[in-house]
Image (tube, rainbow, N blue to C red; front, side):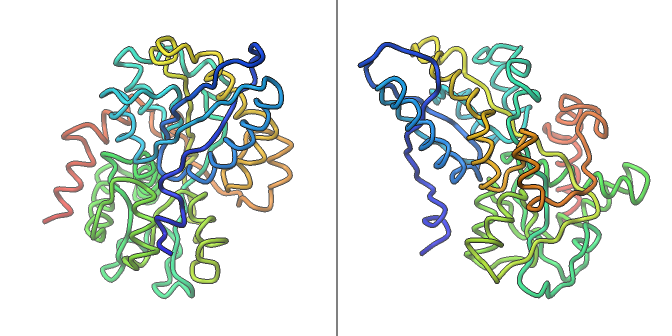
Length: 337
């Protein structure tokens, strides 16, 4: 069975919130537009929501899922995809939707932790035995190493990958110019840029391309522990990044469709102990202290760079690195020479 089929690229699931409504209310449908690696997570969360909501209210709520590269998904919502909820890979993707007037500007403050109910980090996935002896970011620029990572123009995960590697290079070499040179060498070793993180995982696992995959920790653990048990190993680099994954209700859509109460209950439920447990089981790092303590052995403690502290915040980072003509575009052009 292909990885695409195994990971369930087309999933339509039931989910619920917790707000009270009248008994025998008409069935409701929501659309959650999410980023690439969350298919398994929302399969479980949606099932839990469905059972709770139906048990409390007798109303059926169906949540349709849409998955893809985070920035590409944000663009789809801007272009008219009627998402009631977005659960994306970085704050700037929701900011982009808010910038078009679809989400109110205060969205970050509506929920705890800047509206990020769980988080992850970036790791390196290698094949069994680690044949290229990859131990840290510096090994990714060796001439004989092929690196798989998605496109930062379309994938939130790819931007986290890029920034984790950039942060390592900045720390090691001491200047932006040297970090830029390091990144050009790294991208010279990238044979293909998939549009999203799950596509890059497919390229590495199913198609057998590359020596190392730069990936979300949750996807790396999923492959190493379940889908490819015994075939892959995770390498934790000397430094990585705190990869926060925000959620928001799409105000204009829920007001038009009269789904605000259920959509708001849905995103609030993501902070509940039940949902936090499901996040941890799917290899996302939970915010709930008790759940985090329970799964402490699953997640390695490591130095994590932070966007605000180490990069000057998302607006500055987005403009400097990822807008057209920015540092990534310059690096990519240099890598092709």
